Length: 277
Image 1 (spheres, rainbow, N blue to C red):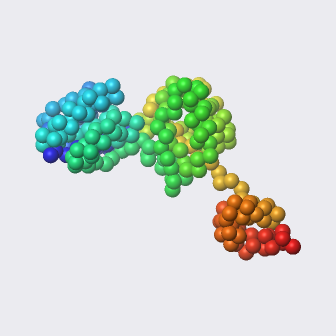
Image 2: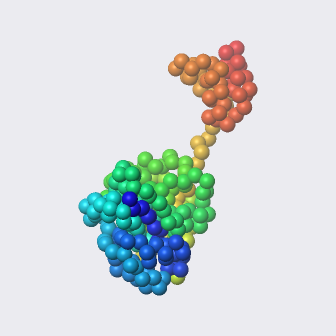
Image 3: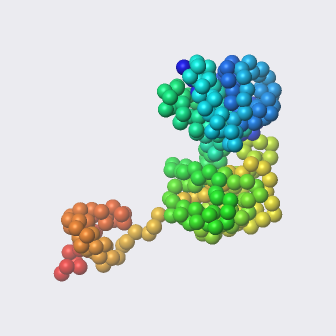
């Protein structure tokens, strides 16, 4: 069998391409590119001359093209998948082919490299220990509002892609759903000549974007703050009592309430004792 290679493409400067990507572009028998013209520009900038067959592989033909590429892999030909920028499969074509290859037992590997998701995350100045990628928000106003409302309580840092045309409306919708004072960052044209990272609250960023923004956009939003824990002894005792009523043994209920509210078990125990005297 051949091997499926998923290649991360530069998100801005061609010189960010890895040595492995250069070698693979020159030697892989089949190259599936999201935009063959942009691939030609990239290989020209890298001074690489592909020797393999180049085919288009984009959203509209991904389903049928994936079957054709799987035939190449089963016939022993390596296939390299490359999108316009970043990693295939991350808001770009690639997932269907990977699933088909995995199900057929075809080896799949990655040529790691640039990603707008992690680049924006680390430059945003927001917490990076836990994050989730949400792709593009829904285009329709109602669907977008519902989706953002669902995410309002998400505590991990959120990363989104968005078009410059829809950015003002999306930031306004985020301010409505998450709160205008939620910290965020808009990352524009990352790694390119006119790179800009605008940091502030969602309310401030929504007001800034109303004048119009150009370029490739990634939005990073801080997760929801931790809810304040119970501290009043009566409230702690009531929380234990509610768990006991639901069938949880008292000792376990005390442990759970202490953990959820960030207080020592002894404090909760004392609150329970006082409430019963």
